[in-house]
Length: 514
Image (cartoon, rainbow, N blue to C red):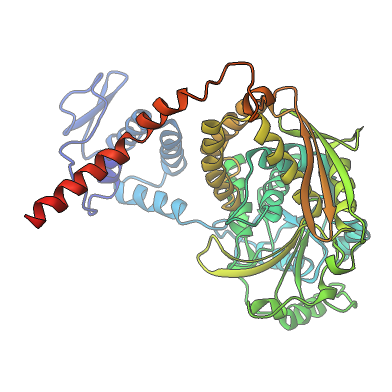
């Protein structure tokens, strides 16, 4: 890459660069000419420049090579100088949305798949895309458990807003099985509290958008995330990972709409159905795993949330006076049953949400560090997730040895960071997944938990792979495997560094006194 930078951008200072890394096979006087297929091109000729780039691309990584070759082929009829090639590459690197072409105000796209919720913002985006990019708009909604009321009537609303097509997919089982359960197995918790409800949902939605774009022949995708939040990163990193050729449009980073009143005015002007219901004072995101609350009085960390804000959980003070016991069965770190009844991933989580919700389980109020740099305050309700997280941890207490558990806890922090930052399809995340899968093959058994007024405590845990041996751990004399007298030698060796340091400090103090 250093050589590539030096060739394409010679004005940039590059350290430790002595010569370009041209392919030597079939070349003569690499700095003066370049050859290909027995032909030799002079340095100043357009053929030299094009073939040089192709050779360099072949010797670089496959991705960069294909990218450079693509630009040369695309521009060969117009580009006959290295500066022009540099300009083409630079424009590609800096591209955030599609390059303007004749058509709408901002350019021309063929068809755009929009992540659509039916709210004011995404409804307004539909005509805005058509006006600014002269394109068809396909509205896509992912059902990740946000509730029946959230998905009813969306098709009619989308088409009334100007969409040419509406697509909805039920992703609940995929969401729980392929996204929630791996995070649960990994013990991923962001900044000590956040169970990553929104963070896990974005990649499954974005992945489905890429699939829909392929199915309908779209050349772009769009989302309604603001330029201040984490979700814009999560969506777009997934787009990049699964189809880097797709154009990405983020209206909140482009348009002149500044707030709700501007959006309503734009909607009326473009005959977009405006919701007549009272807008919630909170910004909420709900799926099968959690419900998040932001905004209004929550923007001041000194304010206590209003009791009527919570929707998934009852007030712990008003929860039943009698505790409820729930047993979670697991195989290889994956939950499979509740109270002895095997359920699908989505149904299992829904069952635990109902049980935990009526006991006020899973409320979290925290100030977190957003990926984009600022701090934000969020309140989360995760009843079923809190129960499952407790069950996994208790079972691992039986089945994991100390070194494995400590390594897992260390990697869990990085895993949570990757998921929070939208790097679901990152190679490092895949590698940690492989580790978690390997060590969890013995995390099999059952955990009984006690739920009472917002608290979760363990009542029992059993596993056929338990490393706990009562005959060894008991204070009574056991099978003879452990001899208490052996502890003396272990302690002397284990504490040797401490003794040596203490001896050194004593000698130093003695010499100072002299």
